[in-house]
Length: 260
Image 1: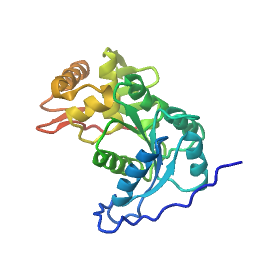
Image 2: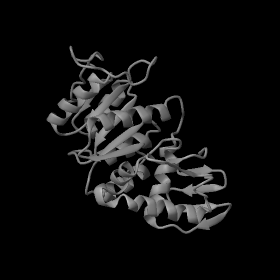
Image 3: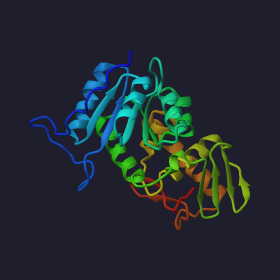
């Protein structure tokens, strides 16, 4: 017998709790939170509700698909490791159906393969556990700003282009003016992430955590090394960048316009 679909909870925050509007002047977005652990669904769902979102909860990918068919969902936040249907399979099912609802995957810190594969499967972003709920709320706002009112998002495209630079995401192949560029796998992964999130500022710590799950206290230079590698390969001058901008005391930003 099909599981009954719950009614959406009200968007109002709990009494006495501060609420941060996810987007001023816009209706509250509906978040589908998918996690097999009830305490996480309860605590994280409540936090997002206090932040101004409507939240629907599902215990796995199968239940999430039921809710997607019954309600208008603005964004999905899903754990990866779950019974019956995990987060990556959920992404594949959603994308196979031609739906571009943005998806953020929550991955384990030591599961580097899951993080690298997330974008290839069609996820829009990913966040390593454990994480600060405030960071997740920030990621949700950024993804919604980037994807609302567009068709296929950059994170779901098979090819990204910026001027004469082309990234074939499936082949992990980079070309510049028709010439193939040699980059290490980690540099390609970093370039992929920056190109699929153009105009967004990323700290070194956030890039390490999202892409490689490395302890950033002692490893922040790893990002700098990969940025230098990309710049050398692309002939990008750090003082007058065409592609990657360094923001002092901030991090890095892909500053060129990106299209599919």
